[in-house]
Image (cartoon, rainbow, N blue to C red; front, side, top):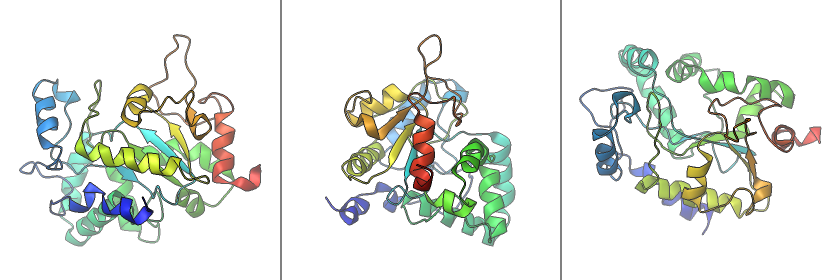
Length: 263
């Protein structure tokens, strides 16, 4: 399969909904996932349900051009950001449209950076506000240690979520969504590239292994970087990115993958 053929299979190319950042009258779950997500939500506590009124976030950055891809669990939902701030930004029509376009371009891999260009300050600030500056803060230490300019740093990394839909918290994962089949194909395609990216497993390691059909400790071991286990042999939930977060010199491998000149 070629890169072009794979991109043409991306289900988010057919995501049908209007350019909205939040809409209580709209179910924004992709139609091919809706029955599974709706069934799941019926039996879950309110804070563990996947949010249907805010856009999905399966990808951030461009996985085809990135040197390092972080594998996380799902986007967080913070009411004062993803609802209240989104509704305020909805009132600014041109900004709302630009923010939606930025978000959509991440879903279909039509971006060159993890974040919008800072030169378009309103879009940059709005994008970060909706995300509560979460990944900007998590990546700050790594940005400093790679010793490259910010624009170059953010062009070399990407994020893939196991679940594309947001929630306040997530204590049980769905791994049989139709959209996840594309995620699986995408990662397996990138793994077969000899100069493909490193994958940093930040959350939900067993579920990622189950979705991909890969044992991270054996197959493709050199391509996956795992979090360091705690005294109870569990991977931490907090997504810290620093030298103490990873096993087997993982942090150094991340730094030098982003900036090979530091090898």
